[in-house]
Length: 133
Ligand code: HEM
Image (cartoon, rainbow, N blue to C red; front, side, top):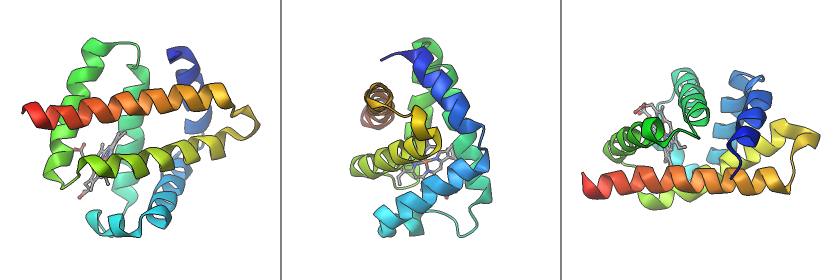
Protein backbone atom coordinates (compact mmCIF):
# COMPACT_ATOMS: atom_id res chain seq x y z
CA UNK A 1 0.00 0.00 0.00
CA UNK A 2 1.33 3.47 -0.88
CA UNK A 3 0.05 6.05 1.67
CA UNK A 4 1.10 8.99 -0.47
CA UNK A 5 -0.83 7.77 -3.51
CA UNK A 6 -3.93 7.30 -1.35
CA UNK A 7 -3.54 10.79 0.12
CA UNK A 8 -3.05 12.41 -3.29
CA UNK A 9 -6.02 10.55 -4.72
CA UNK A 10 -8.24 11.51 -1.79
CA UNK A 11 -7.23 15.17 -2.21
CA UNK A 12 -8.34 14.97 -5.85
CA UNK A 13 -11.61 13.23 -5.03
CA UNK A 14 -12.33 15.29 -1.90
CA UNK A 15 -12.15 18.52 -3.93
CA UNK A 16 -15.67 17.59 -5.09
CA UNK A 17 -16.93 18.19 -1.55
CA UNK A 18 -20.32 16.93 -0.51
CA UNK A 19 -21.01 15.48 -3.98
CA UNK A 20 -18.66 12.67 -2.96
CA UNK A 21 -20.78 11.68 0.03
CA UNK A 22 -24.01 12.02 -1.97
CA UNK A 23 -22.65 9.74 -4.67
CA UNK A 24 -21.40 7.25 -2.09
CA UNK A 25 -24.74 6.88 -0.30
CA UNK A 26 -26.71 6.78 -3.56
CA UNK A 27 -24.46 3.95 -4.73
CA UNK A 28 -24.71 2.15 -1.39
CA UNK A 29 -28.50 2.34 -1.19
CA UNK A 30 -28.84 1.19 -4.81
CA UNK A 31 -26.49 -1.72 -4.09
CA UNK A 32 -28.06 -2.66 -0.73
CA UNK A 33 -31.49 -1.04 -0.33
CA UNK A 34 -31.92 -2.73 3.03
CA UNK A 35 -29.21 -0.50 4.53
CA UNK A 36 -31.20 2.72 3.95
CA UNK A 37 -33.30 2.29 7.08
CA UNK A 38 -30.17 2.17 9.28
CA UNK A 39 -29.55 5.85 8.50
CA UNK A 40 -31.56 8.97 9.34
CA UNK A 41 -34.00 10.20 6.69
CA UNK A 42 -32.15 13.53 6.42
CA UNK A 43 -28.61 12.69 5.37
CA UNK A 44 -26.83 16.07 5.19
CA UNK A 45 -25.18 15.70 8.60
CA UNK A 46 -24.15 12.15 7.70
CA UNK A 47 -22.56 13.44 4.49
CA UNK A 48 -20.39 15.81 6.52
CA UNK A 49 -19.35 13.33 9.21
CA UNK A 50 -18.48 10.66 6.65
CA UNK A 51 -16.21 13.04 4.73
CA UNK A 52 -14.59 14.29 7.95
CA UNK A 53 -13.91 10.73 9.13
CA UNK A 54 -12.50 9.69 5.75
CA UNK A 55 -10.19 12.73 5.76
CA UNK A 56 -9.02 11.87 9.24
CA UNK A 57 -8.35 8.25 8.25
CA UNK A 58 -6.54 9.19 5.05
CA UNK A 59 -4.38 11.83 6.76
CA UNK A 60 -3.23 9.29 9.36
CA UNK A 61 -3.00 6.26 7.07
CA UNK A 62 0.77 6.19 7.65
CA UNK A 63 0.46 6.78 11.44
CA UNK A 64 -0.92 3.65 13.11
CA UNK A 65 -0.54 5.14 16.63
CA UNK A 66 -3.16 7.73 15.73
CA UNK A 67 -5.20 5.67 13.28
CA UNK A 68 -5.78 2.46 15.22
CA UNK A 69 -7.40 4.03 18.33
CA UNK A 70 -9.54 6.25 16.09
CA UNK A 71 -10.77 3.22 14.13
CA UNK A 72 -11.34 1.14 17.26
CA UNK A 73 -13.59 3.85 18.72
CA UNK A 74 -15.38 4.24 15.38
CA UNK A 75 -15.84 0.47 15.15
CA UNK A 76 -17.32 0.24 18.65
CA UNK A 77 -19.76 3.09 17.91
CA UNK A 78 -20.76 1.33 14.68
CA UNK A 79 -21.48 -1.84 16.61
CA UNK A 80 -23.83 0.32 18.69
CA UNK A 81 -25.55 1.49 15.46
CA UNK A 82 -26.27 -2.15 14.61
CA UNK A 83 -23.50 -2.45 12.03
CA UNK A 84 -22.31 -6.06 11.61
CA UNK A 85 -19.24 -7.53 9.95
CA UNK A 86 -20.99 -8.38 6.69
CA UNK A 87 -22.09 -4.76 6.23
CA UNK A 88 -18.49 -3.75 5.55
CA UNK A 89 -18.24 -5.37 2.10
CA UNK A 90 -21.00 -3.34 0.37
CA UNK A 91 -19.71 -0.14 2.02
CA UNK A 92 -16.24 -0.93 0.67
CA UNK A 93 -17.62 -1.59 -2.80
CA UNK A 94 -19.46 1.76 -2.77
CA UNK A 95 -16.39 3.56 -1.51
CA UNK A 96 -14.28 2.12 -4.33
CA UNK A 97 -16.97 2.95 -6.91
CA UNK A 98 -17.12 6.53 -5.59
CA UNK A 99 -13.37 6.99 -5.67
CA UNK A 100 -13.20 5.58 -9.21
CA UNK A 101 -16.03 7.86 -10.35
CA UNK A 102 -14.47 11.10 -9.04
CA UNK A 103 -10.93 10.11 -10.05
CA UNK A 104 -12.01 9.85 -13.67
CA UNK A 105 -9.03 9.17 -15.94
CA UNK A 106 -6.65 9.22 -12.95
CA UNK A 107 -8.14 5.94 -11.66
CA UNK A 108 -5.96 2.88 -12.28
CA UNK A 109 -5.27 -0.63 -11.04
CA UNK A 110 -2.62 0.53 -8.55
CA UNK A 111 -5.07 2.89 -6.87
CA UNK A 112 -7.74 0.22 -6.84
CA UNK A 113 -5.33 -2.20 -5.17
CA UNK A 114 -4.09 0.38 -2.62
CA UNK A 115 -7.60 1.50 -1.65
CA UNK A 116 -8.83 -2.08 -1.43
CA UNK A 117 -5.98 -2.91 0.94
CA UNK A 118 -6.52 0.27 2.99
CA UNK A 119 -10.27 -0.28 3.33
CA UNK A 120 -9.67 -3.93 4.24
CA UNK A 121 -7.45 -2.80 7.12
CA UNK A 122 -9.94 -0.16 8.23
CA UNK A 123 -12.75 -2.74 8.27
CA UNK A 124 -10.56 -5.26 10.09
CA UNK A 125 -9.59 -2.83 12.87
CA UNK A 126 -13.18 -1.56 13.22
CA UNK A 127 -14.70 -5.04 13.44
CA UNK A 128 -11.97 -6.53 15.65
CA UNK A 129 -12.35 -3.66 18.14
CA UNK A 130 -15.85 -4.94 18.82
CA UNK A 131 -14.68 -8.50 19.41
CA UNK A 132 -12.20 -7.45 22.13
CA UNK A 133 -14.25 -4.69 23.79
C1 HEM B 1 -14.66 3.34 6.40
C2 HEM B 1 -15.68 2.93 7.14
C3 HEM B 1 -16.67 3.88 7.80
C4 HEM B 1 -16.52 5.19 8.16
C5 HEM B 1 -15.30 6.08 7.99
C6 HEM B 1 -17.77 5.61 8.75
C7 HEM B 1 -18.01 6.87 9.30
C8 HEM B 1 -19.10 7.18 10.08
C9 HEM B 1 -19.20 8.34 10.96
C10 HEM B 1 -18.11 9.38 11.14
C11 HEM B 1 -20.41 8.30 11.58
C12 HEM B 1 -20.95 9.31 12.59
C13 HEM B 1 -21.09 8.72 13.97
C14 HEM B 1 -19.78 8.41 14.66
O1 HEM B 1 -18.74 9.06 14.42
O2 HEM B 1 -19.77 7.48 15.48
C15 HEM B 1 -21.08 7.11 11.09
C16 HEM B 1 -22.34 6.72 11.45
C17 HEM B 1 -22.97 5.61 10.93
N1 HEM B 1 -22.45 4.70 10.05
FE1 HEM B 1 -20.59 4.64 9.36
N2 HEM B 1 -18.66 4.58 8.71
C18 HEM B 1 -18.02 3.50 8.13
C19 HEM B 1 -18.57 2.26 7.89
C20 HEM B 1 -19.89 1.97 8.03
C21 HEM B 1 -20.50 0.71 7.66
C22 HEM B 1 -19.78 -0.52 7.10
C23 HEM B 1 -21.82 0.83 7.92
C24 HEM B 1 -22.86 -0.24 7.64
C25 HEM B 1 -23.98 0.01 7.00
C26 HEM B 1 -22.06 2.16 8.50
C27 HEM B 1 -23.26 2.65 8.96
C28 HEM B 1 -23.40 3.75 9.79
C29 HEM B 1 -24.62 4.07 10.53
C30 HEM B 1 -25.91 3.26 10.51
C31 HEM B 1 -24.36 5.24 11.24
C32 HEM B 1 -25.31 5.98 12.20
C33 HEM B 1 -26.22 6.92 11.46
C34 HEM B 1 -27.12 7.66 12.45
O3 HEM B 1 -28.01 7.04 12.99
O4 HEM B 1 -26.91 8.86 12.66
N3 HEM B 1 -20.86 2.82 8.53
N4 HEM B 1 -20.26 6.46 10.19
